[in-house]
Image 1 (tube, rainbow, N blue to C red):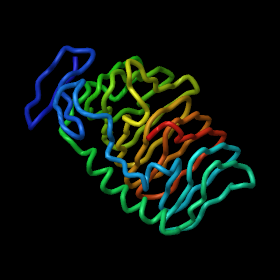
Image 2: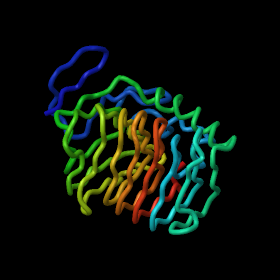
Image 3: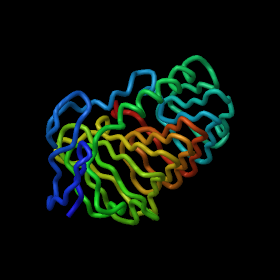
Image 4: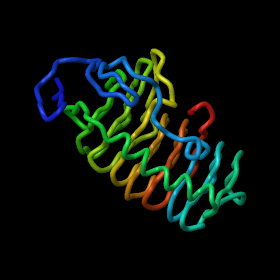
Length: 235
């Protein structure tokens, strides 16, 4: 049972694969709409993007790495490898940083509110979902996103994955390029993650994680340790 909220009206709905999420680009049905997250090419080029810096330790990155306005990017190439370009407070990083605000705001749409912030064992069809606060959002289990279209998860404050077994998986035509996590404060990634993780005011910390997608923050820094992050195929 979840509480579905749309246009200010809330009611309990007994459903497993949800069906009334508003999607970017049109369509109100769970399987309707396109697979675009409205992420411009200026942002899609990046695997990691911070505002106060990027810190990397013993990790591998595929995709550009950037920070703006501060140029504090450390760990490359000393302990980390990057199959991309480093943008330390340059024009490309500034443009991408500025565009993050538009991306974040475009994800602020009417949503279905989930009954719990713990997402272990949950399967979601395309749509926009508001996720309540939880001590851990994925705690050793798997969140499955299924169906072609766009999946946007809007969190109350933080997003936290706990434990090596934690995972986000795709099925039924879902693609990395259609998965977005809107995080008002900070994000913590571990295990296996997929999609674009966009934090507003806080940091994104990626530790012992394999991330297919990107970790970006409008507010502070991105830190990764013993991680593999690739934006290849996530556009």
